[in-house]
Length: 446
Ligand code: IMP
Image (cartoon, rainbow, N blue to C red):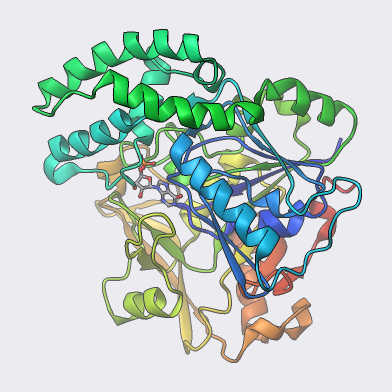
């Protein structure tokens, strides 16, 4: 039963996409379990750069079945654009060097969408923006993709699921019912109502194209797990943006933690063999919310520019700071991590010294955990440890011994402080710029 969950261990953007692509090659199924096209996963193969927002990054391997799980919210328009772009890039791309798969007769993996996943409509995006406006100075800084309002509808039992969406009569009935309510809400905000006929016509065309991909995916995942196939569960965002365990209210509306893989795909907790937590060698955050180690100086700007820390989905500049080991330890516990995947170690090269937060102080008291209240968390002062920096081009390193000794010491420090071993180190965006430190931690030792 080799199953693996890959989660973001910070505030998202930890380069999970690359890891899912690398380990996707060893997988039979890659299943995304939460979020929607608020996520942005970048995969680089040769000279080609793929950007995924909804499609699991494992799709680039022809033998993989890539599933959009029931815990997701799916924008049909965005998904079709992404699908068409990926097919065009993969099949006809000038540098496509992937082998034609004789068995599947494909260059891309197979795509399936859970009939229980929820649909994101334009009124969700409108409401996302209106709600942000209403929050004024306390806005969350959402990605404006309608994610929060789509999950609100799911919880309120007003949502339309993919299974209904692709059946024209069911879709017509549900949309009529839901739009009456949504239009009242939009009018309350002073916005124009959405016209039923034009929305139905536009989205029916998307539904017709997506229908062949929609099915009950839970039995497919459960059967694969029971048959001992390799199933990779792909998380989106990061554990610190989790609706319950993150820095509420500055969070996303789903469950990026490892437990979300159960909620969003139909497996139980004992079906998970290992969990890898992807974290950068430093920290970033997009949108509002507490970020104790944020750097408002030249160092923060240097990391942003040098690390090209701009959002894949929104293009927004990310807030950058030193690694926060208190927050990372919190994340390790929330996700019962088997191993850490440390990314972007190459970006930190060039500093004489680097800092890591090992504790907090608030109101004269020491604190060694992440407080649940965002306003308390916003007041903590990080307590830093200064460590020797490293230099040189790390991108050619293929084993731990190829790294500068200071960088290795930094990794050891992370493992020691969190109690979680380093399983993988990423030293660049390409597939081969990866050091497999502890392969035994990846698929539960199988
Ligand atoms: P929403 O998910 O669009 O509702 O945004 C809620 C918060 O989560 C905002 O602070 C976003 O910037 C953040 N967020 C959502 N998706 C991602 C992601 O994929 N990476 C990083 N931050 C994200």
